Amino acid sequence: MRKAFTLLELVFVIVIVGIVGNIGADIFKSTYTSLITSEIDNKIQTHTNLVSKQIASLLEHRIKETVIVSTSATDVNFKALNDATADINASVLEWISIDHDGWRGRWNGTYNQPIWSGLIDVDDPAGWNVTPRNILVSPETNTTLLNQHIQSLSVGGSTINNAAIFFIGANSNINSFGWHNGGDISGLIAINSNGVENQFQAAVGNFIGRDIYEYYRLSWTAHALVRSSNGDLTLFSDYQPWEGENYNSAGSQSSLMVENVETLKFQSVGDIIKFQICISDDNLFFDGGYSYCKEKAVF
Image (cartoon, rainbow, N blue to C red):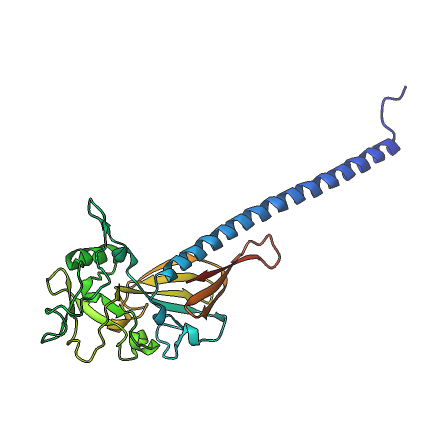
């Protein structure tokens, strides 16, 4: 009776173990690859979807006439988005935002009441048609609460005295909003409080020679989306172009939204903004990286 394997039997066993081991390694590698792919795919899709929703939400409350594209905070060759090359891959997108939270209102125990009403009483005898013509009467606007509201939202110390109003229906061009210290800033009227709850006072001078309309929107900040050369996408706020500020001015606030942005394209179609954002993952597991794109339209 034999008490050991022959050399041939050992060779067969080694070959079979090798084949099984190779198959097992392939299965493990395939499973691991599938797991990593799924994890990266879920992570990058989640980031892209969240950022695109945030951008869309911010743009939804823009003053549509104010949207510009540029290369920097001091680029004097900025353009209105609707005048820029279609599908532009912008490094900077800026706009002036409506104070939607203040217009949406506050809960006063009975009903949701706007802090500022969006209406000017053009026939009020205390208003702009009485010398010195530096007062606008806005019924149901509470300037004390509006000042508190802006202070609570602003990190850089903005108040009602940094706010401005924009008349719906007014003729304006992109150079009239104070972008990059240019223009005559006629598209916005800088205001402050004169101590009366339903009145705005001109921050400088009066309203002589200005077209006054019934409907207005109020703003206390502009926003800028800036994509750096390394793919970081940063959101800037709490600055007032109508006061000669830009997104790099002292007091402006910034927050990093997402990294590894490969593409950020915008296109204006009438009053609609279409944009595409593509975010990549620098995981070295994939040769050449992995990216995901999301498109949205904002009215």
